[in-house]
Image (cartoon, rainbow, N blue to C red):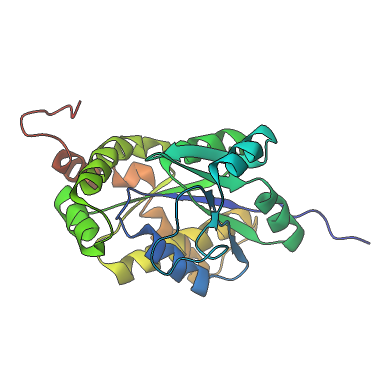
Length: 236
């Protein structure tokens, strides 16, 4: 008798550029079992030691647009003049392998995924404030001043999308953030398991629950204010 079809949990992780999302994702992939990472396709050029098929699948704009016409993407977006997209095949592969799927995508892509996979678990990672984000972007030393300012402007717009996400994670101390993200991923599995939880499992869920959107709203105001121009309380 064949085993019943597995329905993967889809985890969406979004963050402004420079928030430390890639570092957190890499740590979670090392420490959480049965979790597949969807490598995005992009038309941008590789940076530094990036290799095709490891950080991204690097393809031409012509190839990407052909994939759009073939409806090969779960989501895709144009970011800073380059295409990024998640291939539809990754969801099918996760189902076949009986593993969950983690997507590292921006707010445009997240909205598309949420419309197609409404029970996806969405996590928004934020820097503690604008100054910290700017410091992190400068420390990377891979962008010119114009690009840094553009990324900061984009971040200001992106963070306004936080209400669309199930969980909010403020990436201040890396080790704490890794532990919180791990708890969210494991906690969602436990909540969907449909069984009584052990004491240790209940603790994991409780840690994750601290990051629920409804419980984070009070901590977010200072972060939002740091991205708004002086004298403009609306930020618009």
